[in-house]
Length: 330
Image (cartoon, rainbow, N blue to C red; front, side, top):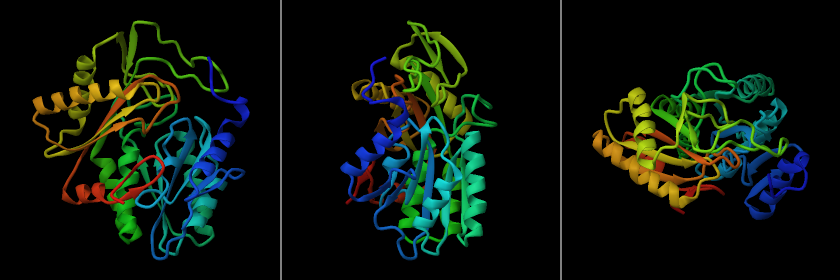
């Protein structure tokens, strides 16, 4: 595999140095692996911290900034960050109003954020935690007990971030984050395998002419493999899998997400099919976001995330956000 890197061992550090050079509005601690909005801590504002293994960019560091995350902790590729990073991030953003940890449901992330919460509370920082477990494809996987955390992470970070920016209390921000997770579901599809810098070749075998339905963002197995399908057929399968579980009673937020190796031309075409299916199923779409947001390095494929949206969530979604990976309204 050809990769635009120096050596695998420095991929994350090199990327963080590049992020610092491109985004002076962020404080990027390359050595300690923490990305913080430069104006943190903001007086009276709840801090919001998330993180996880690198390779899913712009998640999470690309979502640090006004209206979204206060800080992010990048681990090595597909590897959880460590508790020291999380405690350092919490301390950097705590204004006395408390800090919310947003945690994707992967075993390493869960254990390390739990440990970090205890350490931060020992230092006098009030911590709340919300687990994201939106993936309907499988119940357990190579990395998790229970459902995986995937595309709904973006919804949780954006909507909780908007509430925190408005000055909501820690209890209220936590409640919104939980409400979003409970009302969001995702399903992913892989057209090719993912290649990590350390391996330098695909991490699993996905033969030509086949796809995997229900793939995880680290390349974990899904529900089944099939012969290659059309965009229309994939949309029918993915959206129905989400709706069978979510069963929305009103309008939804829709995220049509690329896994990193699929061009926007294809994603927009797939989005048209997603909207077709939702229309046929009688589900109105209030807002749509299309692009590569929760990725898996170079994997070709996509995921669909739907979140049932009430008036408050729509207001929070439309609220200004200014990050490297997501911005509007400013």
